[in-house]
Image (cartoon, rainbow, N blue to C red; front, side, top):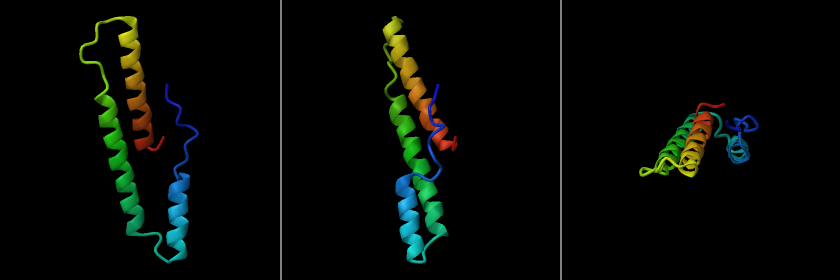
Amino acid sequence: MTNTENETTDPPARRELRLMLAAEGHWPGPIEQKLDAYRAANLNEAIEAARGEYLEDATGTPEDEAYNQAVSDVVAAIGALLEGK
């Protein structure tokens, strides 16, 4: 289960940057596309980092299975952010 429903598509840091650039006459345009590309790259990097946390030598114990499920949930949550959900 992911809990990204309360995430906005315009987080506070991006909104602040957008307002600052708009005040200077630089918004919208290529800057918005760059921000979207950086966001996607960062989220993809986070997904890869999370995937690196899977237990490769899992013993099949309930604890190992729960840990790997938690990693899977994190990957899914980040993926939902990437998809804009």
